[in-house]
Length: 88
Image 1 (cartoon, rainbow, N blue to C red):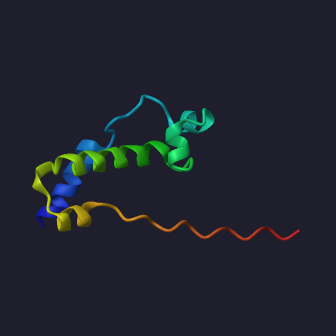
Image 2: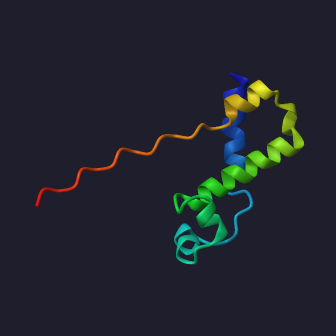
């Protein structure tokens, strides 16, 4: 369907949108605002995604309806379960 093709194409087009030219490790090590905002987890990946959706929201890019925007917008995945501590 169109929406899945659009999401795939748009994701490929925007995957490094607004890249600061640093690495995740650098962002975390320097305690950047981006690292803090994204809790040190996949900092740049979350940054690119957030900036892309701010752009979409601000400009109603390609005329996506609210329903289409909701379908394309990723949902937060639950954190993986923590591993049990090893026996002494």
